[in-house]
Image (cartoon, rainbow, N blue to C red; front, side, top):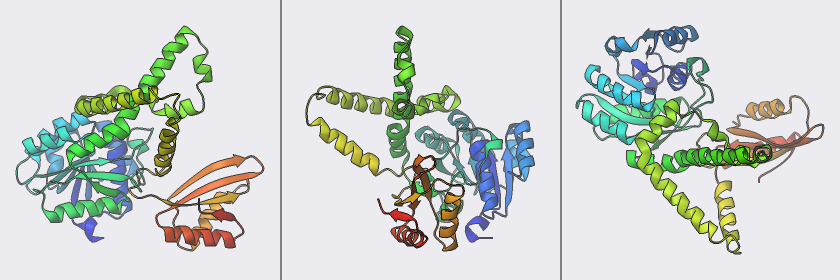
Length: 370
């Protein structure tokens, strides 16, 4: 077993849902040879054992037994439940245990760990920026963290060896580890995640009320409107209820900044200088990796013209795979039935992109760098 996986011998996953279950499957896929223990509701534990997500299961009321001998603990529940569990884990964990979480806000969680953990039980805040529209352990995916940013909030109290083992383990399951302090994390996710949710929810609500007055709004709300407001389908509880309760100040600050930006644009709608706003936004938007699950670095891309026929994507993938070139991202951009279209391929280095370009050109494909 690889050294980074061998460091931990008994890993406990508290909350075996989508994220917790995916952690279990990802660890097994990459060769974790220690004991994987789950703590959850009885029905969830039974299903997790059936799916091979965990090796051993306990109920929440048996947390103490589950933590015996544990050297690594993942707390994978909604934020408010994490705050409660931190107090319990702090009392029950054995000296030397490293505890981490998956909560999408960090200041309250880190503060709770500082209040409830002894100097011999260590805590590293965590936030894997990956998910699914599905929920529950049945939706667990061993590849969920592939190429996803996994934020860690380091603490100087954590021994270097344990922290390095955790980061190595996360990289082993495919995640891209980024370090931030709790304040910087909460401010960043307020801007790039929480504000967009509030924007989408408010915009859809506004248009819905307009449609109630005159019913021609929603029939016209297709295309860009649907794409822009997709996240308005997110349920409030438990995820967004907990996010708003634990990051309200940063969300308010970002709302204020956005209101100011809109007010500025509102005053310049007829001005030619508004073109600069569009140009800048286009430039920034174009630099964001497409469908990249939070890539830290920009992907290196090529565009491939391909005919519309069965197996063409598989053919491209097999040709590149046979030469050891890994595709990190793929998107079918434009297709006309019976004619063909453009496929965008993303790679983790310029060298890989150039190799792919050469391979596909030799096979007769028309390909180019964008």
